[in-house]
Image (cartoon, rainbow, N blue to C red; front, side):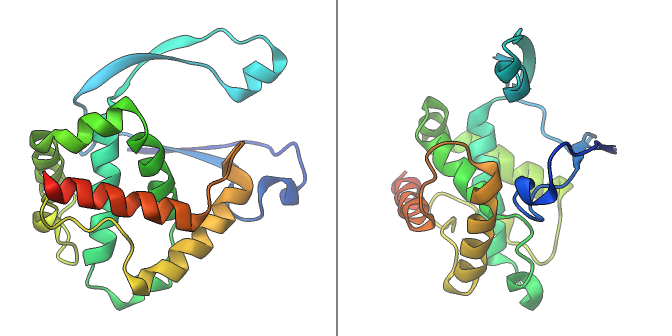
Length: 193
């Protein structure tokens, strides 16, 4: 099931970073979604922080080490996809690069790098529930995973990242080149496991 929540914009369209941020929230839920492992975390919103009325709530979330490996396999899938039109379809893919790098620098990224059983589970889940003859999930193994964008994808990913960074990243915005250097390190670390 996919639920779309449309909301009124309070600012001018230009304040939302052009076309990158849409006035809709998309919530996907269903049997295809991975549900384990989970942890409980306290969250609050930026909006409530600004109003200084923030009351954190506790929610159960997918554990971030699984999210790290989900994003790594998404990038691997994009690199292995046998589809000529994929280069034109940036499709907001660079957010996975940014997220993966941020997670890599956390305890969960380090857990994920060393949890080969969880990687096998992520690949098995995607191969079962997201079967696509254009995607090579079976080679998303530590020795052959490809998370660094290929040369043919690099320019479109970079342009997508630059669009995204204008409106979605708060604070320090790493350059695309910095992110790619970290991805290379992640890929090399995975391959050495």
